[in-house]
Image 1: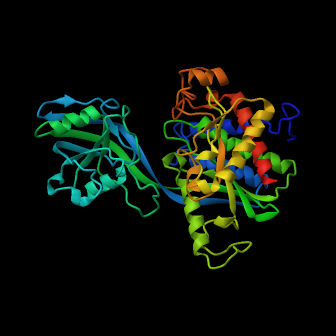
Image 2: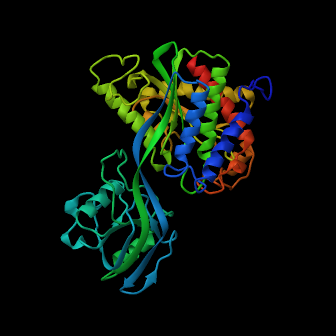
Image 3: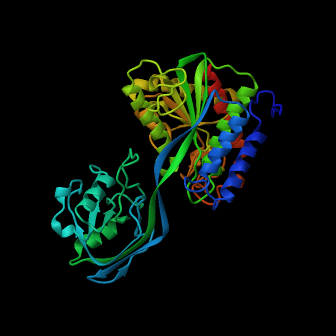
Length: 469
């Protein structure tokens, strides 16, 4: 098909992006309205792979497989105080499960033992915690994983973390090793979080005993990244552009992140169609298991970095046949010049967000600033409003940034509330979320803001071209 542009300066055919999004929605529809790792992600990956294969868009096209833990809450948990008096606690108000916090368990009439220290080391637990639920206040000096794993190894039946006095919302953190990989342990006992007031009540009462019932399942799934290498003139200089392809279990993820995935696909297809020749090598990546803790991008970074450091040869052969090399594309870690991330480009109540280079590690701030400025120049040239946003946590740029690669990218806002000032500058609705369907069943094609997608996809294309030339 020939490229039909919306106006002279447009690069992408928005109808083709729309078709990709419709395909993702159809896949979700066939898998319980989700494209999560254990639901519709595999078919989403097949879709990307098949389109790229059919169009010969890649010099190397591959799937990079890895293991990812998936935690599923099967029904809401129940927590009841039965001694010294009876109280039924309210789910999502007084307490809730923490992600990766154990499997289906029913505890009846078990004691609660408050541990005054952070609970980070096994020796902080006395023998009386065996068969009891350990009560711990969240402690900045100790990760939830370290405390819960120590308690489990001391024989605790469960762990209940409660908030610091200043925290108003219940925690929903993952109780898992941050850099989890195949073979690493996972928590099996129930781990929950409670409000500060519940924590105070349980700490202050004598002879506290509870009933606790959780229904959850932790599995380890095989999943994959889709990687498409486009050889440039200079293989020592590689631009990686990535978008996560999976959704949460609760919805189809058409904005989060069908929008970024479809945009990246269409940019690649359009560049190929127009005969573009990059000077830098390009690697387009559709990450798996982002919603389970950036598992796909972390796996890519960890394995490529380790292989490059272990390798005794200076250069990867043109066609690596060594089974130890984590990907087929002949790329080493030190050839990666920068990483661009595209996660949620079409939020209904959007603001055009550009990642702030100042958040990058000091030794790559200068290069990250080039990326930020390239995006800013696009928005300024079109007269579009935009603002800078934190580049700290929450998407697949993190493992690259933590390992010294200059990063940048775009977003349009998730569950946070648009301020009155943002409404004045960017339009939309104040005091409403950027995306009310974020991580919900209603994140369908109908949730897409086409103006946002048009602006952000054009910005993404502009910057990929500028940085590849």
